[in-house]
Image (cartoon, rainbow, N blue to C red; front, side, top):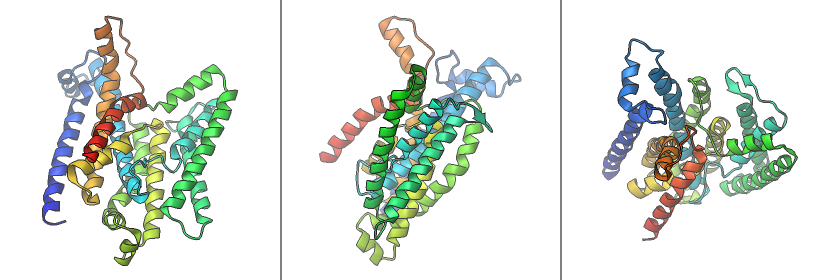
Length: 347
């Protein structure tokens, strides 16, 4: 990385890193309870570590922030990679049917009333992870039946299996009662609810290695983005790149969806925002997407807590301490952002 690219890389990392650092620093003090930023940080160094302020700030809020950071980073990174591999600006981390498979697995758990905890992990999360990985295996088998596995083949197979899973979900929902349907709908809206760091410790081995592999492919993705034939002539093993990148991205996204549910817009708009600001070099786009994706989802999580309070103040009605679903907030924030990006690209 030389010349202007090196300068752009430094600027991108400083800007995105600064935004993320600010989000993390203020996160323990953002919420519906009357515990501000100063109270939160003071409780961390207080002589009474089991105080109410400490519990709210560091056992409830901060784990949500770390979960949002991990989820947003993985979704944005995988979205950037998939948009390049599929040569489709509307590609998302869920393009190959991961979200549909995970949702079907979670719905089956609710329908079978298999709601328990295994090693600190919800059985619904285990079912969702199983469904997502199952869909990935089926997609790879279908794509392998052709003469050559390509991004387009994987895309078509993923869309087909995704539609099948959606149909099965509608069938199971038609047989479910009101309680099961409500739980499923809430799960489909996405969640960052957590207490402590058990889920985070389970997510790291499933997400960090695939993400490091995707970062390693940055140079190859630069070559791939200008054409498969040209990339192959420059020494890129195109088929291996497509398969390994899609498998790695899908595994990381499967882990996130199993714990958080399908959270939309992060993997769609963040890569576009990064490219608009810093260019198309994947050596910049991928790490910047990680930082900005985490910041975006943390910010949206702040809004899920503050929006009901603001609404109560505007309407002069009693407010609730319940948060909005994170998937609802990413849609509310992401839609106008994407439209602005679309207009900017056209201009």
